[in-house]
Image (cartoon, rainbow, N blue to C red; front, side, top):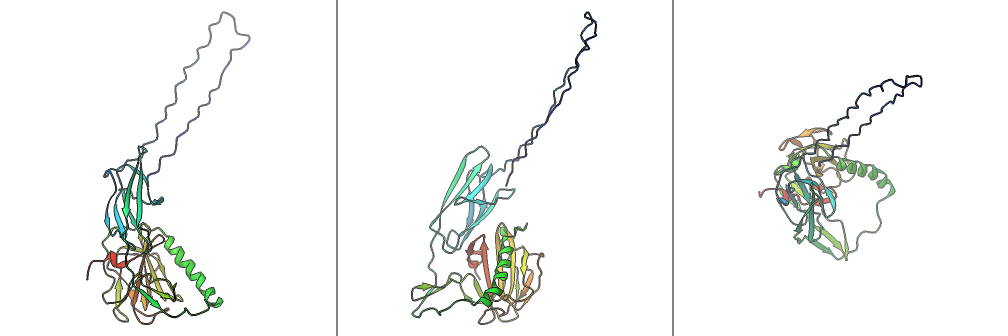
Length: 302
């Protein structure tokens, strides 16, 4: 974002001198040196980003999808549905749409000359894999003992996803982290006698226990569990920049550590069944801010 330079203030203090009362009346008045004006240089104007007349982008305009593009030339600030949208020094941006996003959205940009440019978006709905089960959900909830363990885990996950690393992975075309059978799809959900359970938040790939998986794009490791989390097992989170991050669950082992920068295609770990898993697989989820996204929409066809 371009921020205006702070204003520069200057102060000049003058000391006045008066003639002595004993000076002769016919004495010529003392000459007063001319006061030279203080010149200050004006703050340098912030550079104006050149670019198109309106938003230009490509991507997947659908629930669980994303867009990536260029903001209008002269953009000082941008927003998606009124929420601030990060724009880099070249005017590029990334935005995405939750699994349950509405049918429309609006990109807006305020320009250096005060004008506002808007770009309405139509978000295509999707038909999710829904399984209706004619039984009630199991009664009861999480025990206090489980919650005592779970709360610190959730705090670590939340803090990791709040990180904003200087990575350009969000600009790349993603690659498959591992090849294998797709055993679970993003967005699928069970409904128990009209009561919906949480939907599946990622893509499950089952290549077999011990298979190596790699980084789908550049990023920075913001969480690498030293011991298994209760649900996610050996959890790894990679920040791709611009609020976009990937999480990899149930790993058998991790090959990277927190704070480490990784490149696309670099080894991250091996597939396992740690945490709450019915068998060895890689659960890969992607989030942009609070929006959960479909990893398949980032990938080329197999």
